[in-house]
Amino acid sequence: MTTLIINSGYRATGSWRATNVARGVSDAASSIFNTLRSFQQHVVTSATGQARLAEPDEKLRELFEAIESEVEEDGAKRPSWEAYREAYNVLLNLPVEMPRPTLIPEPHGAIAFEWCKDPQHLFIISVNGTRTMEYAALLGEGDELHGSMSFSEIVPAPIRANLDLFISEL
Image 1 (cartoon, one colour):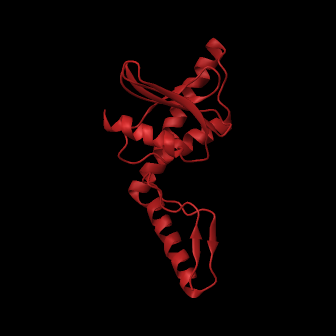
Image 2 (tube, rainbow, N blue to C red):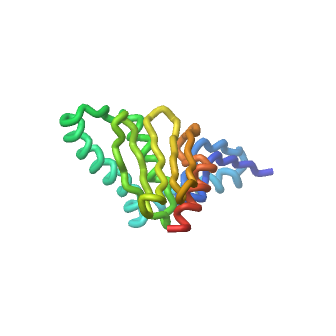
Image 3 (cartoon, rainbow, N blue to C red):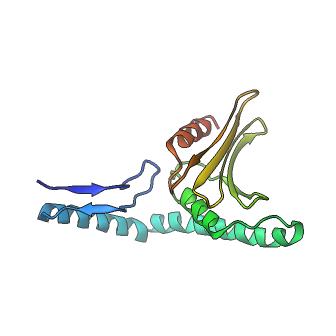
């Protein structure tokens, strides 16, 4: 019997990461683990993988530089490093085919991701470094959605389902 348990493996978000792996003891389990690790390293070192990993860094660097000048001018709270880490994970785990959001620093120190069709149709996700994701959406006149959920690296499924629906109608 061969056993290999992968907690996160391939994600429907278009990314692939093997973390929290419980390895089996058989030769077949070791072979599977090594194949998955090789695949992961190949993706990360490929041109596409490098671009995919560099994009969140660049977007967050631009946001950080913009915040540095604004914080001094208007006294807004600077996002914590934990908020940057959460924002990086959100960007890294967005599907390749999904339009990239506009990053917006919020006055209370959170980092928001905004997808906007027009003033009556927008979707915003916000992280603040406390492992909680807040979201709000305007889906047309009188059609609103908002709330908060626990968050750890991947956008929670209910938020993601609503975001996917919103994006499909852009």
